[in-house]
Image 1: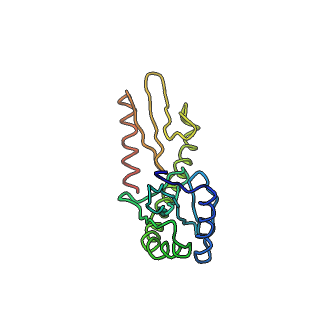
Image 2: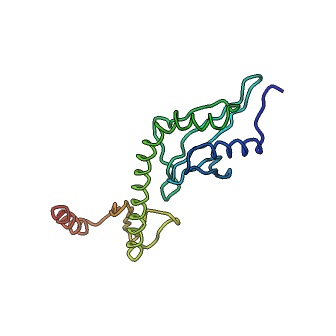
Image 3: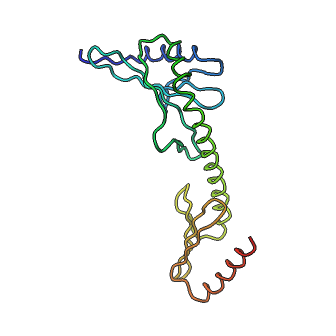
Length: 195
C-alpha cells in the first residue's frame, strides 16, 4: 500500500485525547461542516486535518486556528496566511497539546482577537444595513433578493437606485430631471455642513 489514511474512528479517538490533554476550557467538537475542531470556551478553536501518509513517512496532522465569523457567515482570516503547525500523528496526545500551546497559540491568539473585532464590526455594519433597508421599504418599489442591499425605485421614465451601506444610503439617479437634481443637491450640502 503506497499510502495510508487514518480512519474516522482513529481521528475521533486522537482528537478526543488531544482535547483532554489541553488545559481546562478546551472541549472536543464532533466533526461537522467546518471540519474537526477543538473549541475553547472563549470562542476560539483549532482545526485538525490528518494528512495522508505516503509510503514509509509518518502520518502528520496539520493544526490551524479557527477564525471568527460575522453574521453573514464570512470567516475573517489574515490575508497573508494564517498561522498553522504540523505534528507527527504518532506523537503522544500530551505532546501534541504541548505543541499547540507552545507553537501555535502565541501567534494565533493575538490575530484571533484582532479578527474577532473585525468580524464584530462587520456584524454591526450588516445590522445597520438591514435597518437602513427596513427604513427604505416604505419608499422603494421593490427589493431584489432576500438579503439584497439594493433597492430600485422606478418612476415613470426615471429610475433611482438606493444601496444600503451600513447606516447610509448610496443614491444613484438615472435620467434624473434637472429640477429634481437642483432640489436634492442643496439638501445634501446642508446635511454635510451640519455634520
